[in-house]
Image 1 (tube, rainbow over the protein chains, first blue to last red):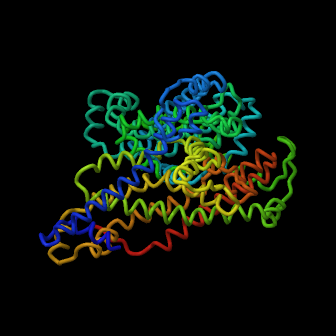
Image 2 (image 1 turned 180 degrees about the vertical axis):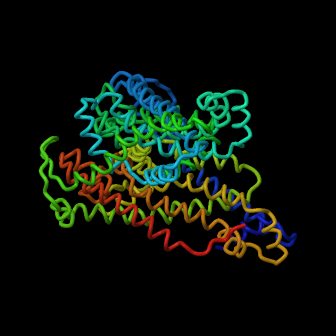
Image 3 (image 1 turned 90 degrees about the vertical axis):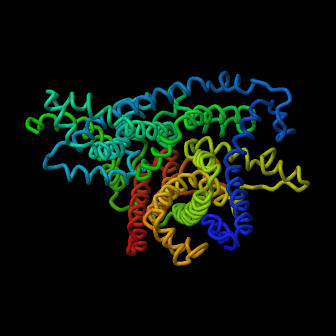
Length: 293
Length: 287
């Protein structure tokens, strides 16, 4: 509590008499913040560095920089567990989910935001309520449906339910954004002879791109990271996304430290690079996804 | 606009067909299936409330329920608490806030499976990060995942994973508070800790409320971390509702009972969200 007082005195930097006190507060704040950021950086740095060591070196010199960097773990990841294939599977599945959600959701959002009809209020309420449906609550029937349609262990088995699960969120976020676009633009495009479809592609889609980006990134992350549905619907090696591979590595190769570190590094690094490039959109996406079920 | 009707159908139909068939229908069907007993995948017999009676007498389900609730307590307090402290701190500094924002948030983008695997490496008895640190400092190795500790050991990565998320929500809220408020407070002589409790926190109370509701309902969705780090063990000591539901429905192919557990998760989520909303419903300060 004492420290918080000091921190706030700095925060306000109100009186010269408190000058020295606020400096202590400032140091304290930076120490705390740095410590927390270490908790996020250090474990990943540890994994990353160790992924370039032989399994034996990970055991003996776990905190040292790799003296004799080797790519063997990465080669193993491609050869023994075929991580390349899982990457591709993840990309196909999550990429398709994003495209479908943005296309279908974008159209629906446009109708919800800019057209008047009787059931609008009801549909809006249904969409909001569906954010509360967790994957657990639909997986058993979805699994049976996929068995009946003979789709289990195909890409579609995961693409379809992921699309359905993300549509309400996408429609709500995008239509929220579209609702703020001035009516004059709509009227102007009617003057120019645009029909509804052209109005969507030429006016509303380009203006709403930020919301599409936000939704797209969040939906991608959610789909790419979802282990639960993947284990149930696409666990077979030839269609399994990367999270399923990680789960298998942890149970089957739990002693191969090199392979584990390489697998973690390969899962995390692409997302991390992407995150560093577009972090504002990521942060907005994840927080607007706050309500997602 | 004239002639909109056809476009309304055209634009809305695809979305509502997909969600109708693969979201709303399964949701309802799941409730129905909770009244059936399934053997294998296709033979279902109506058993009335048997699954629910089984649930009441299921010791493991009770363990999973209490573990989920216990996790909920830790996760809510620490995720939102740490996030609040960090947000107030980052708001108060002038240099480096961008760096902290970036590093605090990034665990969110990492998949639970990767974090789970990472923490498996951290907790491992032989050559785990923690034990190697202990050995380097001259201590004995410790068995980190025991029946007593396993729940805490999955709580830690769960908290770590999501602190950044609440941090960003709260920081955004704090930065939205108009400066006039602080100037007025300064004139009144309200500073330091008083200012935090009388000004900052009351002004972001609705965002705090959102965070708490999200943390509570979010805990019910925990699956990945527990599944990868402990598989619910040792001896069900870290079983949560999500992992138990998965185990029953897909491990033991008791789909009807799995559906019943899913119903429990939904009801629990709705009830808790409702209760928290009611409890936190004080008059809100607006500006």
